Image (cartoon, rainbow, N blue to C red):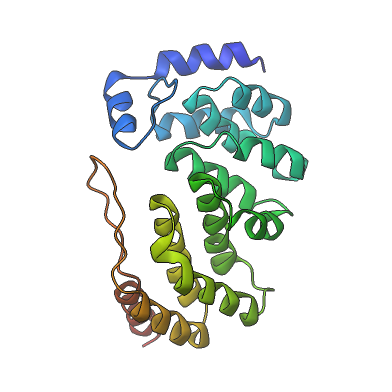
Length: 226
């Protein structure tokens, strides 16, 4: 499928209302304002297409890059590709979509650990997003791996960049949800960290209280078990 045809279709699907919404969420570069529902429909129609994904990402258009993350083949992306795409991250919407793509690749753990300490707010956010994915999805990683990350979160969260704090807080929650042992350690870390303040701009988004979130999640689990 030709990239210019997809870009034209994206342009036709965009709306002024969506552009304004995305702007409030930090999307400032070229965008058409395509809803995620329409992006998902288009991605389903296209299927996996590595070459198209590369062309869409290279366009620099926000909607095209979100679509690129949905149609890219995680197994076909090299470490060099991922690092190159990561350099283009500039808002949390595309960072979250990109993290979801990387989480499906064989390089998820490697890139997570490589990006955590980046001086770039968005790259470090992607690294912590990947930790969240790993905590929730990877059964093979030992508790010791996550214990070391809890120590880093406790030590560095409050002095990290704005959106990195948000991603670290999400990772803290995800680690706490992994099993009862890590729950105890995550809750202790959350109590020491205290309130996590994140500037969400002109949106209604809020930062979850990690301690409260973990406790409520386990309470719901217990109710289902009973």
